[in-house]
Amino acid sequence: MKKQVQHTIKDVAAALGLSVSTVSRALNDHPHISQETKQRVREAVEKLDYRHNALAASLRNSRSNMIGLIAPRITMYFQSTVITAIQHKLHEYGYNLMVCQSNDSPAIEQELVGVMYASRVEGLIVSSTLYTEDFSHFDIFNRANIPLVFYDRVPRDYLAHKIQGDDYQGGYQTTRHLLEQGARQVAYITGPLSCKLYSDRYEGYKDALREFKVPLDESLIYCHELNKENALQTCRMLFSGDKHPEAIFAGNDTTAVAVVQFAKEKGIAVPQALKVTGYSNDSRTEIIEPSITSVEQFPYEVGVQAASLMMELLEQKLKPNQSYISLTTPIELVKRQSSGVVEIPQRHE
Image 1 (cartoon, helix red, strand yellow):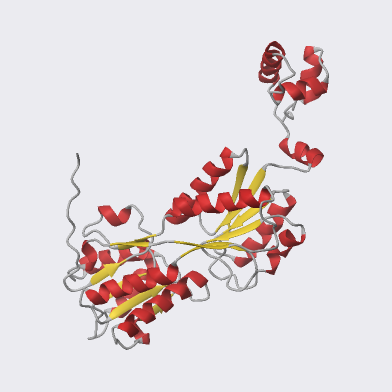
Image 2 (tube, one colour):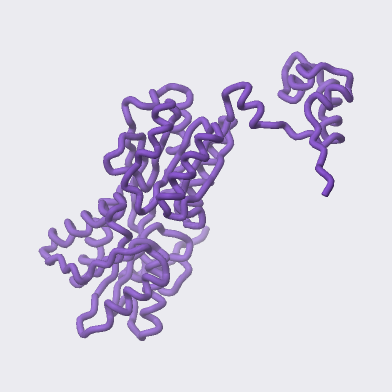
């Protein structure tokens, strides 16, 4: 196969009889370059299919204008919305976003941290895996004074800038709501408690039970990755004996939807015989029948805050490794039919 010819800025300059510096200034819209020259350069660039070598430029200027982001799974509603917000906000400041996903693997996450560092990103934004307990692989960024911001799945003890949802309140308010609706056997399907956000929600769950003087029943607690297959398996175990839960607090909306589907297949009326709540308030919760009570996490606002904090660090309004910022974003319990709430249709003007 014939190797593709890649024209350089020198080729553009030679074709126009201009200096390389003049072509470079024209491409960067320098005010001292005439509009006529800029137009000639643009036409030559298009004709020669010249592509700017951002990597080479970053090596020369020690700047890449690139922010790295590592997310567990970009297909998750919460994560995809956060990433969109971060990209929009960074673009306002002239930065691009390099996105990678760890697939909830600490080994892949560690590898990606090295890739991001080698790619000369100017900052790194991270939502860690469910199983990351040792965060020392991020030390390379701290040693180099490269800004590092964690969001959502944040370290428990590792010193870093963090933006996290009020997961304790999410767990507390959801459980309290189910108890107020009359349920006493409230099952809790959660992610691994090694992950801080799930352990925070668990503390809220336990405190709500304690407030209503309902004993904690460990047999109603299931900890595992929150996907459809695991949710259905858990439902089969919860309803295998004579004692059945009156409510299920699902750790995400994928699990909540699976619970509702299981109940329909088994002829269990929701919410009359089983009340169900989810977490994240993705679009499915509104359109499924019955609609599902869920916790709104305001992911777009989380993304804006993560990007804004990164920009403050890059602009040296905050020192990268001192005065660590920890922000807690609010949650809101959105009550719908699945927990026994009768929805009032919204009036459209």
